[in-house]
Length: 112
Image 1: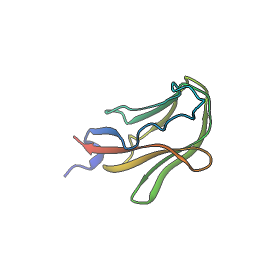
Image 2 (image 1 turned 90 degrees about the horizontal axis):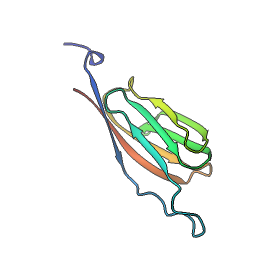
Image 3 (image 1 turned 180 degrees about the horizontal axis):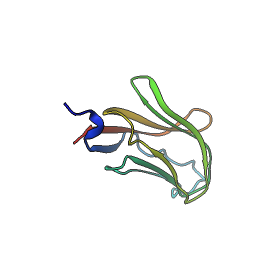
Image 4 (image 1 turned 60 degrees about the vertical axis):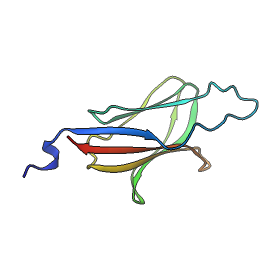
């Protein structure tokens, strides 16, 4: 039996929540893009506006595996690497500084 690290991993990102509606006076063009490379597990988060104090949380079954509070300038990219994560299902949550959830995703990692 080969250890799981001997198999190629496959990473899938699925959005759980719709984008929140912007405030009444805010333009609807404010978005935070989230991508996950299926082969490498590189997670990329890129807003098209300046974001300050964004909480990025990756968890599974109540256990937090990664947590960071980041500020990302407009059109820049914050990256995290999930290639070392074990096979399973994880939740990615993006929160404002006050704990309000902006969006959440399911990350599924399988061995091919």
